[in-house]
Image 1 (cartoon, helix red, strand yellow):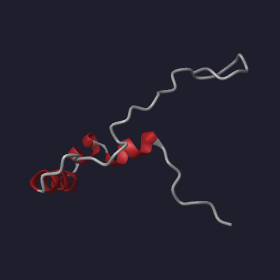
Image 2: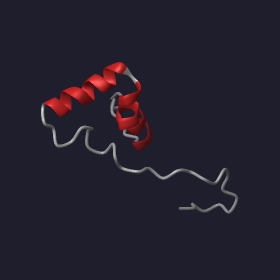
Image 3: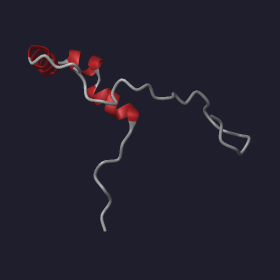
Length: 67
């Protein structure tokens, strides 16, 4: 059985569909403009505004996970 196509990642979702990504391109600004004109409560898809944890430590030397 093949692997499923949707492999969720907060970082890539934010980079592709986030507000800053939308405002960078002309087409993205058009999307925001259309959604504003349609009266959308939410301009961006759900889950984009969620903050992802940045990995600050380069290497884990202790052998146990660091959160």
